[in-house]
Image 1 (tube, rainbow, N blue to C red):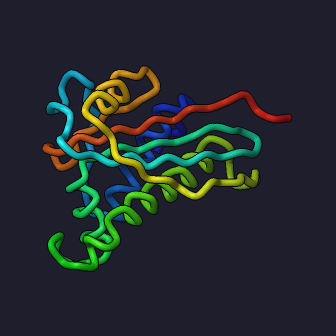
Image 2: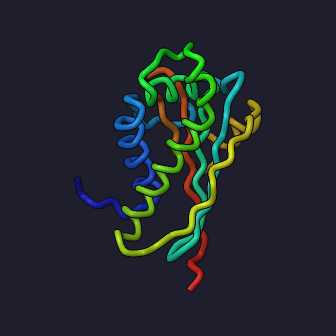
Length: 159
């Protein structure tokens, strides 16, 4: 795999790999205009990082997809109580692993980063649409059906 240097491209590539390896789901990049309309219920996980680079990573998915991610990670059916209990944790874990891999790809193995604990919140249709249209957001179709949004924001380094 050739090294991407564009942070947004790196984040997109890493997210697709992590989603596939962790949750056995496949993501294809899409244009915001190609996504289905905003989901009725969605969740957004956010986390910050500081170190040689500082910034934030956010991931938004339909609420039902949190269940699917949890079920796939646990090896159970989406209607299993364990998947329902772990749905938000699964989204946080997906974001956390993605963030760690993105930072390694961008900064290498040596630098140490401080990562915040991912936080999850509900997303309205209006918030979803604004997030999807943000220039820093990458849009995906998961398994050719469900939308997902990933946004990487890099601040100036604290050196």
